[in-house]
Each structure stands twice: as C-alpha cells, then as structure tokens.
Length: 215
Ligand SMILES: NC(=O)c1ccc[n+]([C@@H]2O[C@H](COP(=O)([O-])OP(=O)(O)OC[C@H]3O[C@@H](n4cnc5c(N)ncnc54)[C@H](O)[C@@H]3O)[C@@H](O)[C@H]2O)c1
Image (cartoon, rainbow, N blue to C red):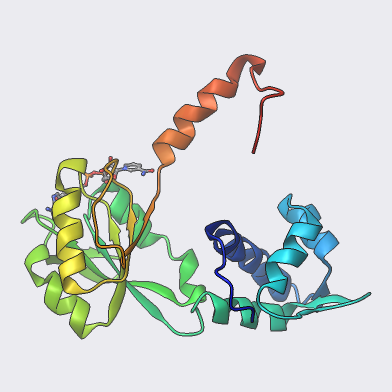
C-alpha cells in the first residue's frame, strides 16, 4: 500500500466500489474489469484503476479484478474487516428511519445504541434496540466500543450532542442536522445533507443545466 495520503474523494468512492462488488459477489461473478466497473458506476475506468492502485496491485491484465479479493482488500482499507459500532442520537423521524435501515450491517457497520432526551422516547424499541437517555451515552460509548456517532437531533441541539459524543471518545461523527459543528481536529465530521442536495436540483429544472458544469 502506498504511504501517501489518500484523498477524501478516493475514500468516498471506495464504498461505491464495495457496494457494487458485493452485488457481483452475490451473483457469484468471479472477476470484473475496470471497464465494467466504470460502465456500471458511471466512472472513468482509468480513475478506478488509479484509485485501486493506491492500495496495491489488485488487477490482472486481461482478467480484471478478482471480486472476492477486491472486496476483502477494500474492506481492510476501510477498516470494515472488524465490526464498527455506531451510536445514534435523536430517535425522531430521521433517526428511526436510519435505525431501521440495516443495509450497512453486512459491511460490519452497526448502530448498537440509540439515545434521546425526550422522556416518551426513552425505553421504546427501534429495530430491537432500546432507546436510552442521553445521560447514559458516555458510559455506553465506553462499554460498547462505539467509534462513530450519528446526529439526528434538531439543529439547536446538535452542537451540544456533538460535545457529548466527543467527550465520550467517538472518533467520527455523521451529522444530519443543518449545523456546522465545532469539534477537535482529530474527530472526523461528515455532514449528510439531503435537503441541500434536493434544493440544488431545483437549479436544473426547466432545462437549465449547462455547459458550465465543472464536476
Ligand atoms: N440531512 C438531511 O438530509 C436531513 C433530512 C431530514 C432532517 N434532517 C435533520 O435531522 C434532524 C432530525 O430531524 P427529524 O425530522 O428526525 O426531527 P425529530 O424532531 O422528529 O427528531 C429529533 C429527535 O431528537 C431528540 N432530541 C432533541 N434534543 C436532543 C438532545 N439534546 N439529545 C438527544 N436527543 C434529542 C428529540 O426528542 C427527537 O426525538 C434535524 O436537525 C433535521 O433538520 C436532516
């Protein structure tokens, strides 16, 4: 594996490769070329080869990539060769939907604890997980080796919750609240913003998409 820093763009493409490779594996497809990957994922095959070359010489000329081997390698690279426990804070509409969505479980990423501050939510069950009071978060993070936090609380509460997650020792946060969070540099934050994605689509209505597209 090359020692240079891997860009965020590459890291974000790896789960896209992994998801498609998992589908191939389910269909018992043994190998795949960068051309096929590129076609299915609407990515440039040269880009895919470059991305994967960061991590080693996986491809075989004329044969392509061994699907099982590539899955194993990408999982190792993403640290998904071990179970990663996740805590979700905010058992409202979005939090419940995410907790019920278990597609990522096969990639060893698992919501193991759910927290809320509202008394009527505490003790209820979502996807077999009992919602706990936020006051129990710090202890639970330690006990359950929770490494990632998901924030699905109102924007006014998000920083407070982020502070608790950081104090508890999580290493990364996925934030769904429309708030820019302040956390120490060693804690990785990703913002998930369905709303701005949707609003920005409005620009492309009425055939307004254009030659200025730089993506
Ligand atoms: N990013 C996106 O794509 C997207 C989409 C929809 C909603 N959102 C955002 O997600 C968040 C949740 O939305 P929702 O519709 O599920 O809201 P909701 O009101 O249904 O749920 C919020 C939950 O957070 C709990 N909560 C409030 N303060 C808390 C605290 N300090 N500690 C623990 N729990 C607390 C509430 O009791 C409630 O159960 C909002 O910030 C919303 O703007 C983001």
